[in-house]
Length: 312
Image 1 (cartoon, rainbow, N blue to C red):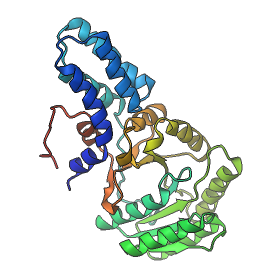
Image 2 (image 1 turned 180 degrees about the horizontal axis):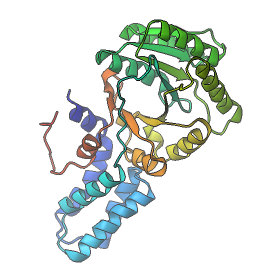
Image 3 (image 1 turned 180 degrees about the vertical axis):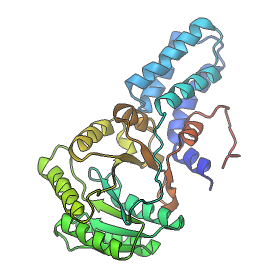
Image 4 (image 1 turned 120 degrees about the horizontal axis):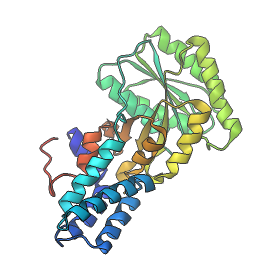
């Protein structure tokens, strides 16, 4: 399945909601106040956030004043233009590792999908010819290490882990030593889920960073917040505090295939200007895909109704 097809399938719930509203008003000729309200409700329901939704609706209203026969397709193009402008610079891209290993630390709240994302990233990198080591630094949830072990076996990935309750920073240190000795391109650290309002848990992340910096002062090279896309704009509050406490460098948005709230990443990017590196669009290893603004917009708001998968 091509990249566009994966995005289209993964974001189908949000797309159906938006296109349903747009299609309902597209055959009515002039847009009424009720039509505008229906469009507003649809964009809010997709969790684009108040600022972006208001930007879209204000542009629609402006266009409507200039053209009383504004059609649904015009609304679609206006929304795409606004979203493209908001998302300028949002595509996170990894350059070739400047140091070996290049350390990527995955953090976030419980249930966001960090463990699965760690394994899927490892798979994606190895498919690209890179060498990878996984570090199981979630030592508080016994099932997390077992889950990562199962994934590493399934995907033939090397793993360093500790016993249940072990010091997460010590596991990270050992994982870095192993990755260095093997000259791995990437070290992916799966950390324990933690509420962003718990100070002692946030301090543990700081300790992990300090210990890694004994091996390499630039570690971690990447600190990505993994956010469950179904939480919608609630992810903004998470991202703010994690960013303040740990210094985030990017985002991974997961579980977008099960929600209509695909607009949440727009809200988060608009608030913090943190690049989005990957989207989780399904349960299979290759359903974690690099974020693409073009594929995102083409999936949520295709320029033509019934757009084909020719780009797949």
